[in-house]
Length: 113
Image (cartoon, rainbow, N blue to C red):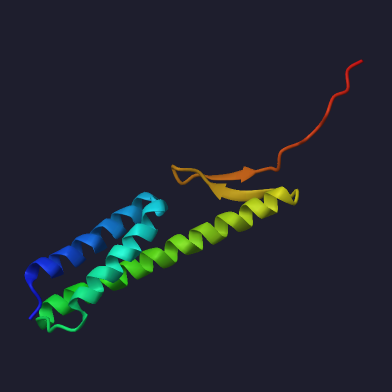
């Protein structure tokens, strides 16, 4: 049977990963992935009560969905920035959720004599 402290450590890493994803603190994800892998290896070969295993699986699935959504958001932002760089306007949402049209910067040099 897996000691409760090992399970709690794994659950704490998953919660920290979830918090980082929801806050957009993606710089923490590499460190958390390593901690998650270490915690998973610690409990891998041991037995776990079914209810604890079910809870752990739900949390892992939730974080996987959040990771997928974050990845999709980054990919979408890259596409929109690429569109702006190529000279096209695009629609974006601000922090309050309002839609705005973003136009590419107008670069113009003025030559003064």
